[in-house]
Image 1 (spheres, rainbow, N blue to C red):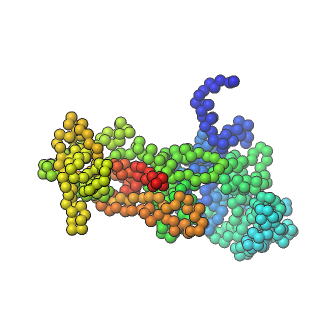
Image 2 (cartoon, rainbow, N blue to C red):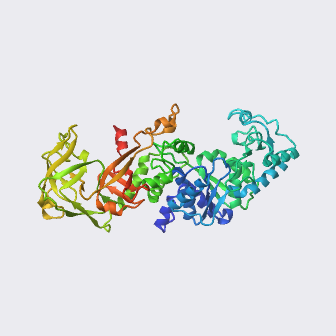
Image 3 (cartoon, rainbow, N blue to C red):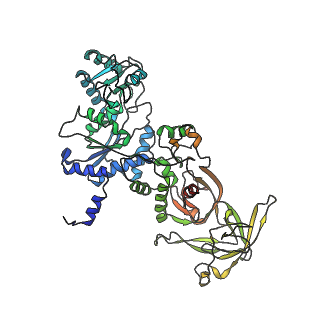
Length: 568
């Protein structure tokens, strides 16, 4: 038995996923001259979501791990759905996740002339033909997985006629949908994708880069592999739905490649999360129909939505590392993503006092007009985070749900005759409350024990309940947006008998306009800053904040209440 000399190396190799193992094997075998070049190929027809983040981490991450490079290539082959807005957002999201493509930014449209030349060559070699059937007719004559297809009546056109028609298609002489260019492969193939797949279709719509130069555009299956080849990509890593496309990918690539260099396609499982949807079509519907406020709505699974909600790049990458890469599709609990952000923010977020549903607490025996500065720990997980001052006065605000006049057993918060500690301050005993005409509590009364201030010898006396608070005089009003899961059901995609919009969670957003926040929070809050509101959850300063009006988004609660509800 060979002795392992370096434990770290052994553990590193042991931890390689199956994609990394394949890449490592190719590099050791000297394939493609020992090069590693991956690519991330988004279509610029929407914003990136958490599923794309998994692909980004794979494509860029594996290049980093093995000393290779990763291209960013926009597969812009359908100008009708594409927009420069999407291109800019994709670049921003990739950079935010911590990756960079350097000088390797490409577009499929860069290769339109080369793709055209290849298509013409295939026509000349009798490997492609122009078909005048409708899309419905083509679909029908392709057969089924158990029945072979039927040859198109145009399959045996002469080469000269095919060349002429293809040229005229691009000149704009024919309407959309009247003609396509198809590869001539095998209509009886067991692989449906080999049954004379479409290579080009007519689209009369200006392209964001090439304008009106082209009236025909290549299909993804034809453009993708060739684009990989033109860029020198060695490993084309994609999700499992493209596994059945791989033989076609290889068929087209071999029209260009030889033994010295050929891209290799590898597939991994896509990321599906509970309580949301990943379909760009459905996400676009939510945006266009105003069911969310935009692509960056914090309820959306988009990268920009998660960023605005307060997620960090580290939490997303840690989540993706946890779930890993396999060859089996499934659905991942969003609780794992929420756990990752809790874990991350627990280490980095300052603890602050914010009262979301305030009710006034008056300390009847506290000196009138007196203000004391209490010391609050910024982050107990970070010994270098220091402390900050929080003013303590006669009148405070506490959470309304922290008081009950007639509580059940084991209610250790504020109730008449019971003592609680006000965090970082004193022990107080509730003496009663005042209600309005509707029976709603307006004020709560208590008395404090001056010998129990936190940090003093008398403060060692223990009570079962500890409440957070803010000074009524010195606190500032703020808006809080309490975001929750977008859908009411775990897997909206499985609810085939319902429109997915019917499954939206009506309580996915609650807006509180009268939250009270301590001065330290008001003074340090900048857009994007993240905090832990003590006993409530983690929050992020939203971009809608103004100098005189701060807005906070709830990133995640302190505990997973959904899992508890599901277990009941």
